[in-house]
Image 1 (cartoon, rainbow, N blue to C red):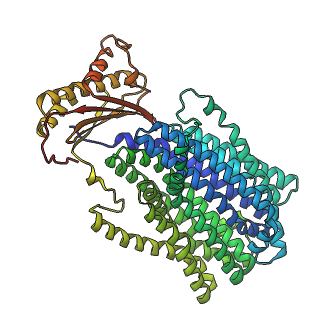
Image 2: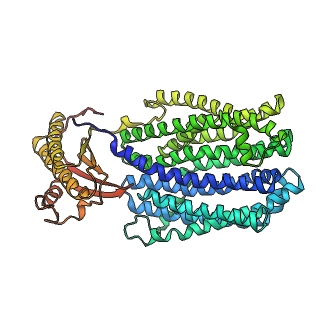
Length: 596
């Protein structure tokens, strides 16, 4: 009867998944539709210019990933560790430093735009000219992207994924609306695409106002001490594996663009742009699922909830499997239709496009595996392994195979992606085997959960008074099985029952009956009880005697619980109530056994 079900973390993943998929969809489709509009209205050379500008876009994304993703991952872990003040320092430094670096990059690029554009276009003056026309207004999107979407990441971790989706969807809707207006009706040419992107992100800043006016928000700008400034380096280190993906994409796009232009000309470059947009479509699901994992895994990792991590990753894998199979079938069956969406309909263009799309589609499952594992390792203190994935799949293998295939047959260049993904997976499997032998961990997740000390009881109960009464007996029995003295065991049983009963009555009085995860850890020095539920805000630390609206239940029991525990800690994160009670103990078994 009493066992951990994982229902809470699965529900939380599903709660985060749809808004995050919508966020990812808004970002990806904005770029895809930009390319469609440019290709259909301005021709394949303008479409090629968008592809040539991609290295600069990757540079903007490097800064965003370093400070945005690095900051939110670090802050999630700190909140899981109950370091709330430090989490707010991370928030402040991430947003302000990231925005400052974006402004500096903007200033530098405006000065060196001409030579950079010529280099991107490999000396083609016309392509260089329209590439520069697109990039000049686009560069102003960097600071607004960092500020608006960066804060949106923290809003999602504050238990408001729908608010984040609104910010991103509205920003990109403005972007697409201005695309049609500026390019289709006002004849601004390719510059209109850059202007609309910058304007969309600027509008995104206005959508942050409701969050900053909220009294219940967690993240706030603070003034870190001089000693806390070093947190910037920690943010960069955590964000580096994710940023490295963009950095390797920068070099990859430079090298691949040169190989494609040399081997297949401007038509090949326009086909490369279509393939890049096909990857963006798959990233709706890959990045959306991966980004749903980040705040949940970061929080659970900080709390050392390894069972919850495994259940969340399992849910993510099911989504990705379904998405990859569907997308591969779509691209394999309808490559010509995909090309026509981007204005490529001529016989010569389709002759290059159709085999390219089919060969590229083989990469999608490898992309999903490598992306999710890269993000997971970066969140769970395996940054080197995450960086290895980014370097191998993002640069080394793909460029090596592209060069070799271009020598054999230029039409096979597109196979370089799937060969790169496969080679990276094989290297990862070999590296994981070495790590498992060295650290005594299991599987590809390689979580070192065996280092968690003490005996553990991990259960899920329904948020109801009847189940609250039953958990008391189970905890007392578990304590006595692990040589806890009877007095301490009884104290834990009473505390657990009071906490569970009040959680059921106060946190779930409006919502439908939910669930409560209860974890008891017995160590040599203390006993730790952790409660997590998905109900309304319920902070037992602020409860006053007799404060319950239920006439049959008073919060006097919570006052008893406070007296029994040596420490009581509460936090609200990811929409969960998480309460930790700590008890001192008198007698322990020297080598308590672990129960999972």
